[in-house]
Length: 435
Image (cartoon, rainbow, N blue to C red):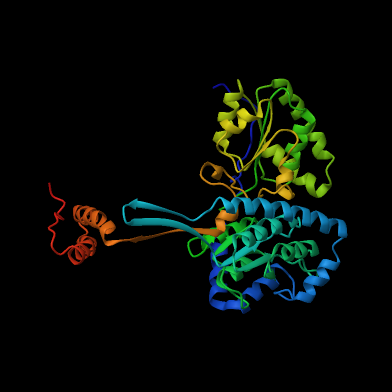
């Protein structure tokens, strides 16, 4: 393989990562021991909001009245797409049973977790789509209680559109609390809430660290880092579309990597020429992030051919992977490491982020090597069961007794022995495991 870096990242997503673990651990410990009152202390300190923590039905209705009708229709459209896609995903989880040996039947069934805690960012950007993605999938999975938690803005509260979306998608409770304190409130069951069995949704480094720290006590969707995106483009791609898509993802954050992988030098050079102007044309709040992300974290990689491009992409295992190249079926079959795949110019990451139906809570920082993104499956426990006739248990008990003794686990062996002696008292069995 021959790769040439026309632009190499000066930094990685962890270059300036703060060590926030001790801070997060302290806050979590304080809130667990201090309960509601301590959570409120941290909320006053960080959220600077003194309204209701648990939104009332009247407050939810009032917030909905502030959302423009066209935006409501857009939220409803996105919710319908995400819901129908999640329902289709759920259909792939079915109860099965198999007669392993005559008389012994083993099976599987899926059971939704009871409580889901959905974190919806609301700081720099109001992540309406995150409410749709997390709450909808939990609802379709069948979780009995769903909390949507979002940071309130000082003297304002949660953005009305987030409230409307969370309520539409099926949240049972909307919690006006941000950061570690919001995560803790869901995990510990504060303010009269059921304890969350799983915590999902994106957030800043403190939210991510809180989820990491609590993992094990509760489930989480994934441990997320800065969002990242990679575009695979050949000479047939439109440089302006490629450049616009790169800039669109770079605006996420100053440390959000974007990568272009191509086998066409002219395309690469034209995209590199176009990107700075597209960034300069953004509003200031978006421009600062995109400028830093492109300057410090972006890469443009020139490969020998499409196989080399695909291999490069799989090594990066991007969160978002876009293909703007010929023969899309080849790419779909060949690529294996990504959070979500966008095939062809006619779709783009922003579609998946907002409204097309697939989920936007996805693995970052190379985690797509071993996991996919948030889906209805994340809320489901796949459990197994078995039952047997006495005849069906016979060969299994014999094998279990011998294997257990070879392992040195005599207690295990005797649980098989007692059944053989009870069910087949007139038979002799070699249960020693010796030749």
